[in-house]
Length: 135
Image 1 (spheres, rainbow, N blue to C red):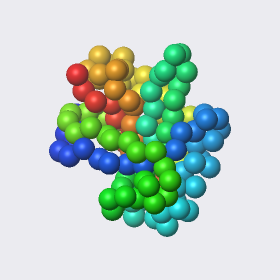
Image 2: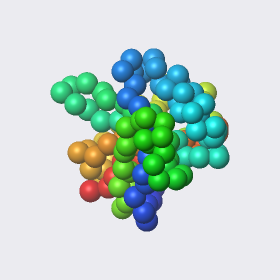
Image 3: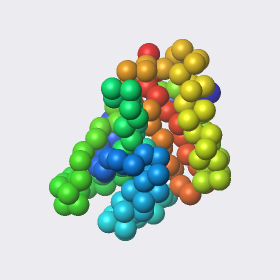
Image 4: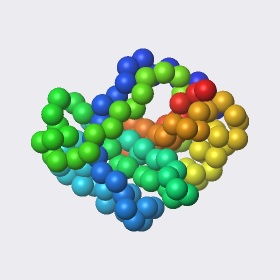
């Protein structure tokens, strides 16, 4: 695990995946189709948190231009600036089943603020960063 500083907050937009975990891929495919940008051309994020004992998962894309959320009719999100506890996952597409274990490892370490959402940062088709804001 590493610590990373996100210097600026990130504005993003996207949609809730109501059939989590089954609908994740379809949600990202929808975002990619709407924006016209694949991973690597635009940052994509999975933003998740627990609510009333249920996992809430949102697929999101970084806003490149102001007003994109409204243009595409999506919900807005802000990934807060600050320090994060992170772990990199290479070749993530073949390892999606271990993402929850990486987040559990970050939580168990005790340095993460578990009141904040867990963020999956899909940098491209190979590299993904699991991150939770540090205490």
